[in-house]
Image (cartoon, rainbow, N blue to C red):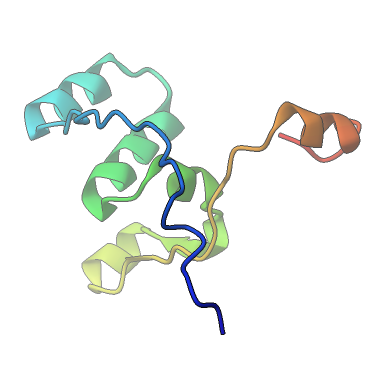
Length: 102
């Protein structure tokens, strides 16, 4: 057991809290109307309706989503989030020699 907490005299990193803007329904509709790519429109709708973060949205694959007309009409549509995309360092990408890196 330690007699004294070694982190007591540690210098905390500087952090500047910035408030993030939250889109309103009007802002979403404006973005969707300006979008010409149908899959990007789907992504906008999913992000807003399912309140997912960008990494979760980018990690979605079709096996995690059923938003078909049949599923919606039968009240069994779903979005199952079980993975997310993470940012990696430039060094990690270089180590992988750009293999399988999107």
